[in-house]
Length: 565
Image (cartoon, rainbow, N blue to C red; front, side, top):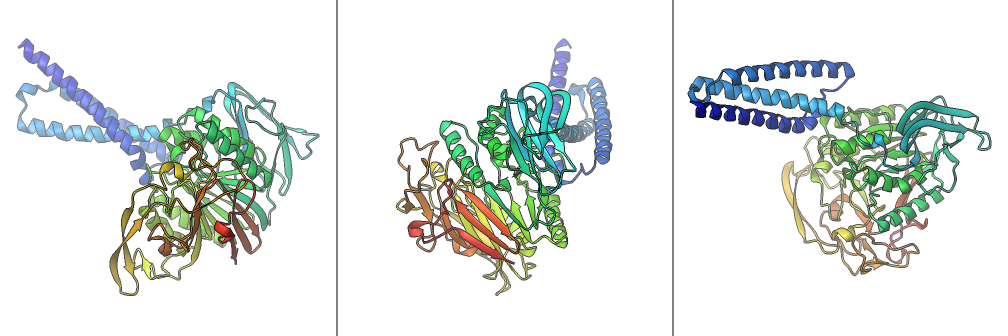
């Protein structure tokens, strides 16, 4: 009899542990699942959901305890077994659901405790670029916040202060004057190698239609060589004196590692100290809930999503910028975000926006190592075409590529419903801020085939077309571009140094899909995008860090694109 009791107790323990572990697993999956159903639309709705789920879980736990106490495992009837099995499933779902909901609330990031260094500062727009700004910086030890600012660098007569002792500091200023240069100083010694201790930003004019901005991607420094490449790309951007700078994700090598944030801020804060930053989240930044929370703590924007999402938009002059989150639901975008994109851009056009720019991280088109992201194409390309959007910038693959794609121009679409008038959209891969695709095997990767299902508007039938992707040709490169070493992290032998491999379909195509999506040119080189808006004209250029325009072999492929309204 004693043996039976011990066996029964052991069985109960195993059952309890199984319930707890199963609940945690379901809870982890629920973190993304709940967001897809928009269960956190408002704080009030969240409170109702949390209270309800907690009550249900408390009831479930009490019921489980009573069941375990009363049951005799050695004498269970079939009815009791089925009942308990059903209850176990309900318990796991309810507990996991609650864990998932709570996890979204408690993941507020570790970066608020600092990196152990004085990092920063950098500026982001709080709401309207005409009259608001947020200045952010990190300190090694918790201290009070003090920031002196004004319109005269010799007389910073305004003070923003907060006596709360914190590591992560955010000075939010509203009701600023439009079209005004502000100067500011922070009484901290920053580890970031700034050229001056007086920093600046310029508010936008209310009816602005002439401005200039940069776009770069994929910094993620980890070693001395990548810190070096990050530095000379940053130097090139700073030298151009842009009104603001956009970044398309993968700032840090790991968003959960605060020291990685310190490394990337070494160059990023030099850019952001004098030009406001518009950031999109990348997979390395995201790196799970903690990384995403760190990213959101560091960069303050007028968020359009819930706590688990990081997408937003801003008007600047006669342009509208849409910053998307490819990782809202563990490398997926929700139906809610897609609906928001349509509503947001439609609203911006109704307000009179001349230009629409969309920025995100994942390579919606690429001939490099990430491979073709067909799901992302099917999700976003029809939306960008129908609205339409003028230019799309993204990274993920560490190179430069340009596509001039008119979806449906060849009568191939994803759905028979896509019969509207189609538009030319400019797509730019701009992941040239870190080690390049040569280090990931773009010259040696094995050929890969993709089967893509299209709907043919001419035949009114679905058809599947197979496309082959091949490695870039090692014999096609340009040299002597006049800036430091090209490949850093894995190519320490110097085998590829000074060789900037290109992909020009007019000479040789490495992907059968390239003609369909309008690839014009690609190159393995550090670079950033230069965008100049002048009323109804927009000029987009790919620049090397020294400011030269990317032109390809024999200057035959100058990467300058003029858009006209």
